[in-house]
Amino acid sequence: MQYRSHRHQRTHRRLALSALAVAALLPFVPATAQAQANYPDKPIRLVVPFPAGGPTDTAARIIGQKMSETLKQPIVIDNRPGASGTIGTETVAKATPDGYTIVMLATPTLLAPYLLPRKGYDIFKDFAPIGNAYELPIVMVVNPHALPDVTNLQQYIAKAKANPGQMNYTSAGNGSFGHLSTELLKNLGHFDVQHVPYKGSAPAMSDVLAGQVPMMFSDMIAALPHIKAGKLRAIAVGSSKRVSFAHEVKTVAEQGFPGFDAASWGGLLAPAGTSKEIVAKLSAALRGALADPTVEQKMLGAGTVASYLPSDQFATRMRNDYAKWGKVIQDNGIKSD
Image (cartoon, rainbow, N blue to C red; front, side, top):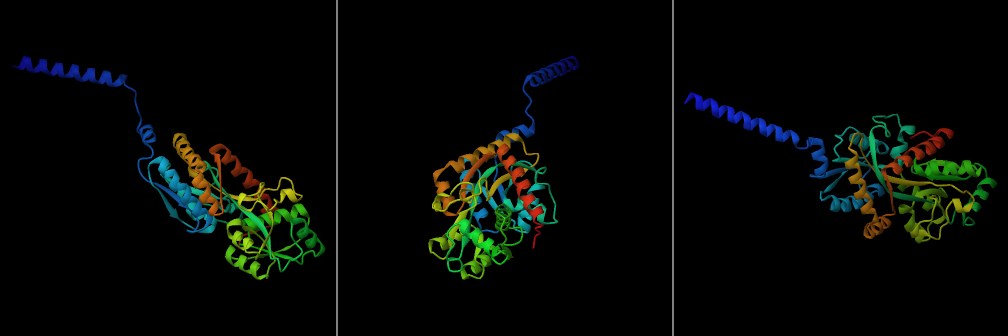
């Protein structure tokens, strides 16, 4: 009996060794690779570092809903506003780089390091760009009663030069995109108008409508209803191309400043260390969402323009705009409120 027991043990050992040998011949699939292959298998959190209802939030919700259809998982919007978007963005910089926490970067957040002392992350080292998602056109508007003889950009500049330092303009605050765009135009056009900053675009717009301050560079979404009602006159679009929903308004570039391009934008980022495969999958879903005609129309209705750039081109845009607008900030000594 003892002999048979030993023989059975030897047989079991041979079978176990054979099984190990077969297993060694099979391809090894690391857990991380398996996770990437199955991605996504749970909801994705999209942090919007601005308040609900604004253009960045609206664009994120429209895009996220369509991307979720492609990815077969919900994309949950998480609003984390504050400090030009840096508070919410910092939470994503510290998130696990598994593709389940991403953020919508907007131009003000990109430029925040020039204006705010808070530096909880490095926008170029701590994130993996997914893709550009939208552009937010800005438009130069004047109060038609305060400036009745100004119907285009050159007339405005001529009037400013005839009254150096006596004309005012407003914006949503020191360091806002409207502020930076006007300062860049002043530098290029060699004219002087005084900045009257407000705390937010709504009160700034209110005083332009009232004629207290005659001009501002405004988000198109905020200005368009007043332009259509005749309460404001649009004299120039900041982006390099005219916008479809106000096609009659010429660009700054068309009115004597070739190459002028001032368009705020938004795009998706993942934490640094997120695998290239996951970034590529998210970027493809973003591209598909922005190509959908229904999404394009919804975004136009919200005042934004669907505008896809793949991750590498988006990274280049980030670096170029960081340098371009950083120079405007530094050359003009602009500081945050």
